[in-house]
Image 1 (tube, rainbow, N blue to C red):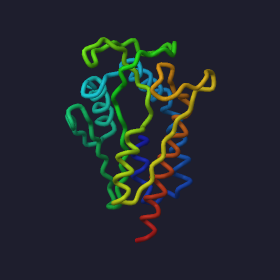
Image 2: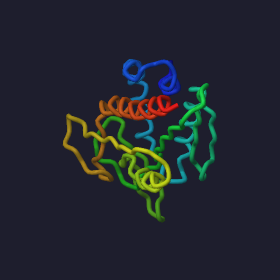
Image 3: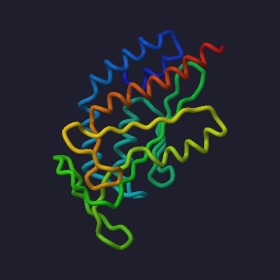
Length: 198
């Protein structure tokens, strides 16, 4: 069962722990593919409004998952919609896909070697910021709708941590499993709570 479809059954017959166990199992099964995507995206960063390759990758993968896909949103944005079989609350996830005009210096095998033009100068490009600007958007909307925002970041255990936006910044890929479980736990808890109120 695709990972995103597990959220659809949360408001149905599965109990929260069963759902989370299923997500853990699915996350373990797809981890290598997700890590490969992350490394590919990291190696081919694109600055804002230039994310054509990234948008194609995202749209193609969301389409494979059976989602309704809209592209060209705010120039290079992508929206994926997964409609469940049951009526109920909506859960939205947001992610930035643009890179920063910074030359990478991590030395990782999948490090970005991309150069591009920014403000008339040739610069490197690097994915170096976890979801930060999403917090600004979300903070605005939580004044109008119920919600919770969490961010997850973890430095790899085999290297010294570097601050966000640094040419030495990278994440510990093991944290991706924690992120999947945390996002699913929040979404499932919200959907199950809404179901019990009916």
